Image (cartoon, rainbow, N blue to C red; front, side):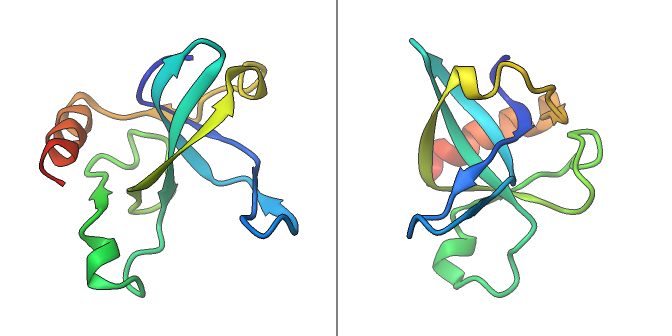
Length: 108
C-alpha cells in the first residue's frame, strides 16, 4: 500500500444503515491508519461550492477507473490499514494527477 493508490473499500453510511464499496484514494499512512479521500463520478448535481472542492482526475483510465472521476477533498476519512492490506489496488494516480492534486489541495 502506498500513497496515491486507489482501492475499493467498504464504507459504512454516516447514518449507520448499510454501506457501499466506493473507490478511495490513499493520501497518508500513519501508524496503523490510512487517511483516504473518496473518489466519485457524481459531480454535475453537486452544488457549486462542493464541486469547487472536487479535484478532477485527468488520467482516470490510467488510474483504473471506469469513467471521469473526482477526488472528493471535502473530508478525509480514516480507516485501518489492515482493512485494505488483503486488497489489490485498482490503480494509482498518474504523476500528472499527483502533482495536480497536491497543488489543488494547497489552494483550496
